[in-house]
Amino acid sequence: MGWLPDGFQTPQRVDLPSGHHLRPIRADDVDIDYPAVMNNREKLWAKYGDAWGWPPAHMTHEGDREDLKHHEDEIAAQITFNYAALNEDESALLGCVYIDPPDDRSPEGSGAVVSWWALHPELEKALDDFVPRWLEDTWGFRSVHYFP
Image (cartoon, rainbow, N blue to C red; front, side, top):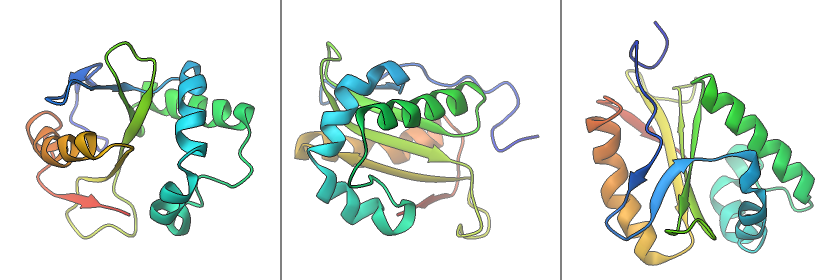
């Protein structure tokens, strides 16, 4: 058995009370992901730079597409998950939620390593309220390592 229960069905869309929704990220999202990431690079680097070395200062549009394709492939294989936080018509990517298997930095008994970011306070509050419940109720995680 892997880190997810046998037969687990990956959520394909999750509506948030803020009017946004989450769905698995795809390589084709590069045109909305790249500006969201690079226009907010300093904020994202402050959170993820030491842990992940992301986002790199000189990331290109094509480099971002390759990164998103890697995420898309891992999602399809149920290895790790990256959910894009989107507005209703999916014209803007406003954040992401990362769900990964526990690693050697995780406390004993952790079911997952999870992190998220949002570009707007309303969405950040919605994710802060929603994600922990979602991880328990839908994903079945009883102990989550929030990192970084």
